[in-house]
Image (tube, rainbow, N blue to C red; front, side):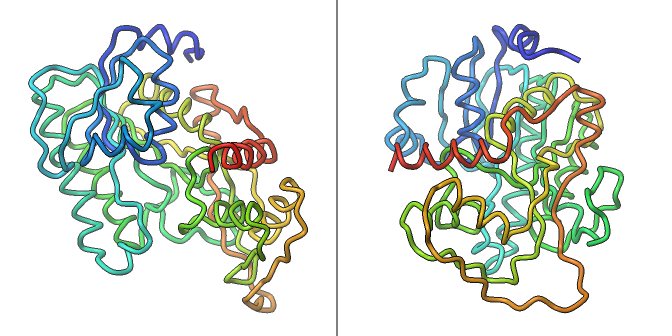
Length: 319
């Protein structure tokens, strides 16, 4: 297992092509990459807009953006050491309104990235998939392992699983990351992320509205831990293997709302809209991360309470 300093040494002077670099995961990766001696080329549909909204990254001499859609971008005429393919339309609205478009962005985009990777003589590819490939986690299973059979139920999950298979069958050295749920800087406070909505409610001192019964069990990894894990998987993960990425520190949605409010120091009301079904086990979406821990020595550096506190402070400072 390579230590973080060793990872830094391994990336020194290397070139990385990153798709999805302007998204949430991408910004967490860029925050880490911009402090390293590594050249990052990012595919973006609108580079000028990204640098305008996030000028911090535009000031980094090792970050370059090229314009293009992941499904049909023009290939840069150069070689790369690594590719991190993280581009996805992770939108609940798109999933509901146009699932075929969601599937196309994932699958057709992956096909294009694989074509580029072969032309660019890429040594190794990290595909950022999703825990959604497993489908519905059995409520009696506390933490879902990588060995659990994949049976996705959404266009997003089906597309991710198909893309995994494409990457593994491409002949390119590939490692698969399956991220779960996260918290940290740049997290939207008005999207489909419960923890982001709760933080936004507390910052605005408005009622926290839980649409369901509050019993679903989730877990949240901080953005800096995500970035470190993805970099470790890129360099050290076993080729052809999938690794869950996330926290195994489980918490119910109702308890999460209370914890966010407690850390925020507010007294806003928590409204639980749904009614619990007597005798029903709560739904779960919590990874087992034993594989990443045992094989690569990875762990959680930012605990749940600290992660929420850091995110609250970041949004207060940057609102």
